[in-house]
Length: 299
Image 1: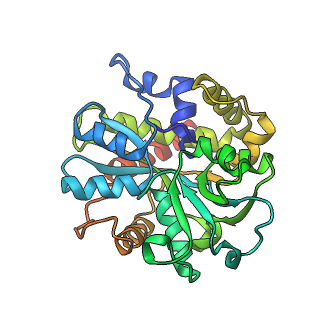
Image 2 (image 1 turned 45 degrees about the vertical axis):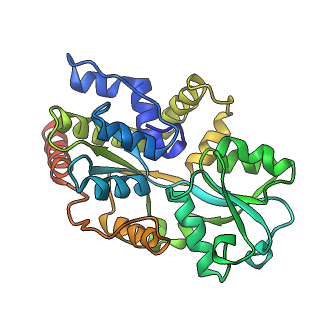
Image 3 (image 1 turned 135 degrees about the horizontal axis):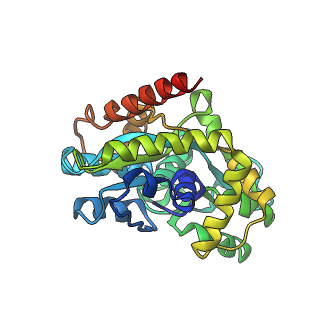
């Protein structure tokens, strides 16, 4: 898992012991990663069996391993990312000559930023344009913006809300760029055919449903999780505001994943390859069916 709010499902599940109950008596060991490629590398090495990661690293990992080391089992979140700029920037055409940031070159937000710039006639320095794009850890964006060294950044929550709290503002909410405002920002991935995955997927579905039906309780768990992970204490009202940009979901949105892959390829971040097996919904569909039948029998 990665400590951002698009990782709400594992953040809450870790606090509530959801997977521990589902997999008992097998032990559950949690590991925190600070980048998607780092998590995918741990999957490749067999250091972890299941993880929550953004679509960019998931697609890249699937292609690199030809589907042997990673498969997408379910969605976890939609939305929750935005292009935030400092005060004084109000229009896209004012980005000429500016310095912008994304969390990591080639990651999901980096692809979104560079795709957006190109769609609006702006070119980066690498393209012989005048917009500079730097890889900057989201936690450092605010300080650089306050020092005047950064004009904007494409970041996930809670950094969008924390930057707003400090006086920056959202120029583009990424939801506005996708049909229905839906696009995956967190996915449940795993090494194929590993023991216990069916129970993990079923527990994941249960946790998504719990968060959807208990938003206030989920916000409290998320706030506690961020604090436990060493983050700055965040008021519940700001957690709620940040989560207002995120839809917790089990839908992996395979068609949107293919569009994201096309965007990354156009930027030279992905090699050609077959993505037809990227998403395996079999365990997800089984879990959803079982949950529906279980709900019916309980009525």
